[in-house]
Image 1 (cartoon, rainbow, N blue to C red):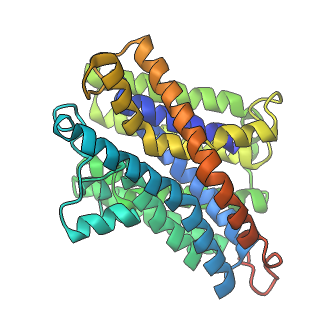
Image 2 (image 1 turned 180 degrees about the vertical axis):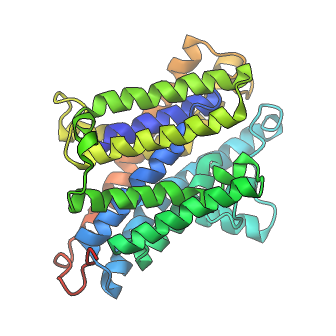
Length: 360
């Protein structure tokens, strides 16, 4: 059931970036991180192992999953820049611009935006790619063994909490607790911990009843996100916003835990359909700005965000455009590459006890 949830989180990001509920997507990003922490720890333990061969196969598989669709998204942005370059800044898309030096070229090719707050680096041909820099950092950390054992994961989680505490003590702006690489450490470490909670059957007794109802957890997560995002422009206390943000992160973690335990959001959603829906999440995330630009030209006659011009027509056109371009990515890029990924994933047996991580 992870696929449906991934795409829902991607759509929350789309709605927050493009339409009037600006902070809606903020609550989804840490859900992505938590799920990634769980899944990457899971595959390192169960598919690859921690020997040199396993690490190489993990790295190659991640490369093939992330980069071909990303480069396609950058290509689309490049074409749009050639056509609409003068309209980008005034249309609210100033982040999308041609790289102006070698470091910028490197960042836009590799998704490695070299700053502890990657969001601060511009231009970005795929604006949401700052979060992929955070993802890549923790993919490397997990590959190197930061979540190889339960004890390491607890230490990692503790250090993550220390950073959050330090950020408040040092009076850092909330950007440091959201956009930065260290900020991503907390949800990633929670996701890794979820792997061990399920593996060791350390599920708290008091949560077991709730965890059998992932649909209820999902509704709670979306509701908290929507209500707080709506209240932010009304002047809600920033401290309360941050409190609700971390509460929502924990609700997202409960959702990941529930699904990792094998619970289903709905028995009407088959595994095949869940995977089909989940395949849309990454292209939606990479390409929603580009699709919105094209939709605004068709509806408004110029490149513009729909923040102040939200209507049903804009929503439908953006959604249809995202479905169409995502299908193109899935059929022409993801599916051919997936055959290579499967070959890499299965070219050796599962990790042997000597190379597989222990639970100590």
